[in-house]
Amino acid sequence: MSKKKNLTIKETFALAVQNHQKNNLEVAKNLYKNILKIKSDHVAAINNLASIFRGEGDNQKAISYYEKAIEIQPTYVTGFYNIGVILGELNQIHEAKKYFERGLNLDPNNKKICNGYGKILLKLNQHIKGLEYIRKGLGLIRFTNMDFKII
Image (cartoon, rainbow, N blue to C red; front, side, top):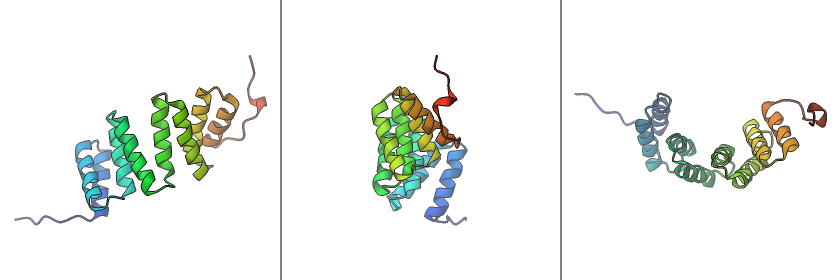
């Protein structure tokens, strides 16, 4: 007869991540939910659960989970980035811009936030400023008017 070992939250999270990476999404989802039953403010579990919902096409549920992560940890830049990306994909450009700006206020040098914000600015026809942020996100030198030709 084998003894069933109760896993710690850390062990359960590691197992959830393993299953998530192996695309065993239902198992991963259940493990993340089990973590949240014990520790409802586990931001990484909330984030990863949101990413599963996003992958399944349930953007509203994903956004609500990212919002929950931000509520728990107001400086959670990844949450602002992820919501900005989803809203941008849903063509809710002005809303996306607000989330990227909130992320930039927290971490102005975050490459992912800079890149995402730059792409949103391009969609808003703010090309020079958009390209500046994309270059910043890519770690390139500052964008100048000399870098492109107006046709």
